[in-house]
Image 1 (cartoon, one colour):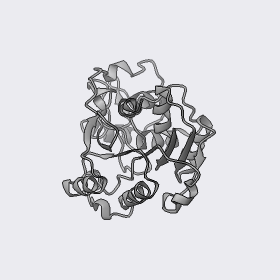
Image 2: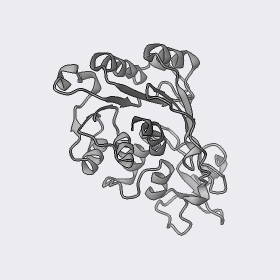
Image 3: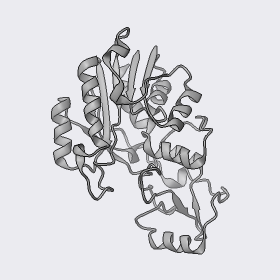
Length: 278
């Protein structure tokens, strides 16, 4: 199978294919974040990096038939987190049209596009019209300990809702983990005041969606312990919220790693969709 992955990030699509044992002949990736490219190459050194999606052309892939085009185009202008919510006209989310351009020029057998379910109906309807398929909304909470509602547009057949695996926060939290981040009394007071809306509480059944730190002015990466103490999630916990294998190498700073994890896909949701490729 030959794959073209746009906005590849830390290559969660490649992890999903790997989990399913689907043989990948060529995996072409378009990505611009240096730390994302490093992580992808550290884990999948045969990945062929193409650079900025705006400069990727059909001619660059002319020697190969692309079996599947995948990607999660930037959501910054679509998500309700952004108060401006400029939609597909925004400087980031307009890159959806680069995905559309390559879908039409490369003509893969299958395609998958992911984006936030909190976008306005008008943007959802534009994407639906352009791609010619209705999205399926899947909440990652069915397959992980994280609430994460996402739309998936795909022509892969027979994609249905996953069966709820009933994974809760208590199943993934390391209660013996040491605090990795020193916090001032002022920050602790701030977090405590925002505990119901801005970070994960360990006594909740599911976490709020983790976010890419590079974008969010706030994040949901803190937990309260039974004794009331507050700490940042460990990398292992971040990975488990996104169902990323524990042995996936991320030899970068914690801030960069959590940025990529929050910006990535819930791997087991993609596995659920890709299993119909077999």
